[in-house]
Length: 337
Image 1: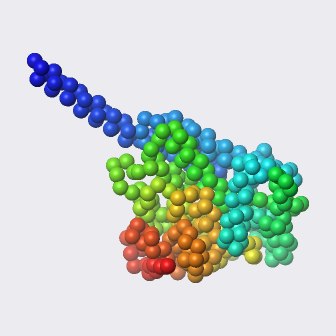
Image 2 (image 1 turned 90 degrees about the vertical axis):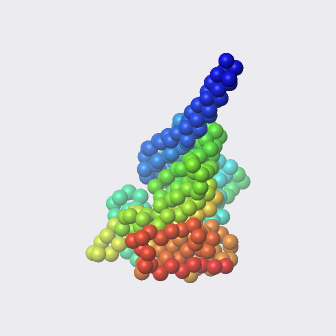
């Protein structure tokens, strides 16, 4: 009798362990639209449902703070002449943007909104501004127009801040933290090209993140641990006039789409906000300047596609990036320190 009881207990314990393992690996998904992009959050385990709700609210809170087109946002109010506490969430994001602007020697510039708006990228009313118009608009751009007075930030008349270059990356960071705080140990968040992973992939091994190719399909796959994988490309927001393509990533020196010979840049690192901003900066810099910056600064690594189909890959990503079969004949240059 004791043997039967013991055997029953062992089987029951095994069954409970199996059910617990299955629940810990159960996949939960939440999709919604925010920050002008489709958002898909995927989390695993029993804490996922609550964590996903908290993560969505975290994304929407960042949107309410940083949206340049939402009249009630902190950034929109700053752009219309109000002051903003430097210690607020938006104030901290602006401070981070200014630091990244200085670090990249202006390749990432959060003050280009007057020029961006003239092109119609924020309204969808696309047009090609004249050179004279852009020259005048650039006089309103530049971090010199942002004033810090005590604990507050203020913009000079005509100047405007746009944090779209790091907003989704920041939102992915705070959403990942919300999931972690809820007890989620494994998740992947996709905010329109901004991918953020949390913990280990269910079943073990690294996360495999597909990098979109300009003509659809995949450029390749990046294997990553917890962190961010962010792509900026000239195929994301653009319009064409008389056979010429114009995209939303502007050169701060000209106010025109950055024509650095780059089609897309994918940046990998631990922080989504920083990877988001650097994906723009690297795009503006082009292959040679981006490689020099990476070597000198020891900064976040990248995979870059040029307009002639060549690929540049930082050495610490070379073993974790697999080129898609459709591009197996592409020239790949590994950037080494």
